[in-house]
Image (tube, rainbow, N blue to C red; front, side, top):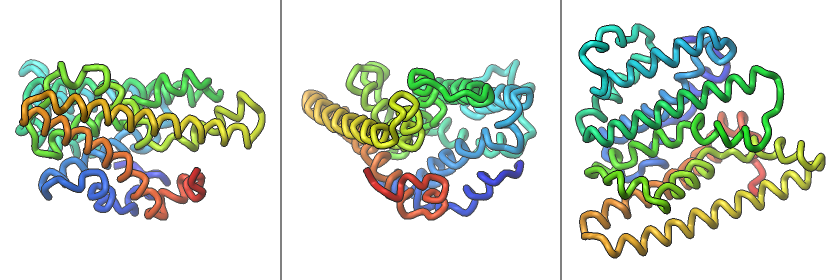
Length: 281
């Protein structure tokens, strides 16, 4: 595994507590896997100089993509040998992928892989925009941020953490559930520190930028709560088993939002990396 200041900081973070706040209902074995996934996603694109060199990072992403497919049992036999990675960071996904493969249906594994593909592609786009040396517009920021945050990758193991059979695509892809994923991503990712400077560019006033960001966050939280309410009402129209799984998924999203803030506020490393969190808005 490569060396960087960010990676050193991550190594000292209390990820056991992080996992416990995000997935408090998970058994130890499931908690270990989902926490490993979150840590792996944080360090996978911060290996050495990858974040600074597209000529290194793009092949690395391709190698990651292929290896994840193999671990999830989604690669054909023809491609199996050629996609076995020798990189230690990438290979760290093996125990995660095998656990997901054993527990998930093909549909669930494919959904997870789709979000992993989006994570890799949006991290590439984020890198391109950053290396251009220009500050992205708000539209450009949101075009990559929801994917590069990897929150959707961890949301894709929400059912795994609850040890539930999978929700069907018709449930996962319906409107309110899609909105729940989006709002959970924005809240759990904690993008406040990134939004304020972008708002400042638009207004050229620091206080206005802070006020607009606070208003945006309040609106997102309200929309999240309304979406939860809609889903919980719809849950009552389902069979007992389906209602339980939908309810668990929704509560899992609530844990993601509250858990991330709980962990960040109690973690001195995260507070040093995100000083804006010292003053709640």
